[in-house]
Length: 179
Ligand code: PCA
Image (cartoon, rainbow, N blue to C red; front, side, top):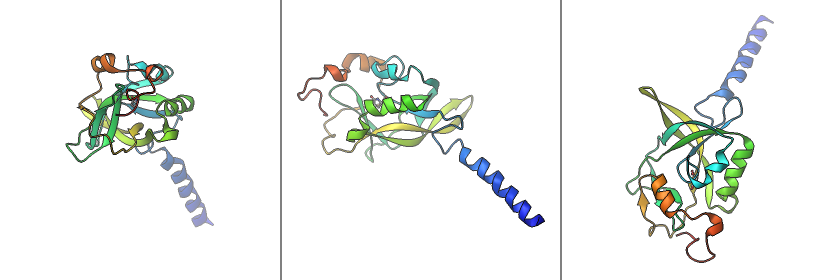
């Protein structure tokens, strides 16, 4: 009987602690979703309004150095994985609720495969030691016609203000389409 009791207690404790491993889940124990943004969702840019109820956590960058940031004709960034001069990507980390995450999925056209929402680890500066956190981010869908797009190091406010064309201002013609 004593042995059984001990086993039960150990199992219970394990169940309670393992699902809350903070670095492996993009969702916090309080139910907030961490989202890493690198494009038009950043502070001061056109689509940031969708994050009005989200909490800014920190400036961040991807731990993975495997990306290329491309600039689509309508002036938004298109993030792909590449083996050709792969880089880490800078951006901002937020915490948001279910409704906000759903609104981001609509903007990024997850249902059509334009972008897909994936999970990666980002690094935030925390004094001298960087901290790694899991977060959702939007990766562009793979396409064959991307090699004509220019590559950029970061999607800055200066670039955005100069070239971004909101969805409702894109014509049906080539300008709105990608590339
Ligand atoms: N918005 C998303 C992905 C690309 C874009 O323009 C972002 O800011 O992360």
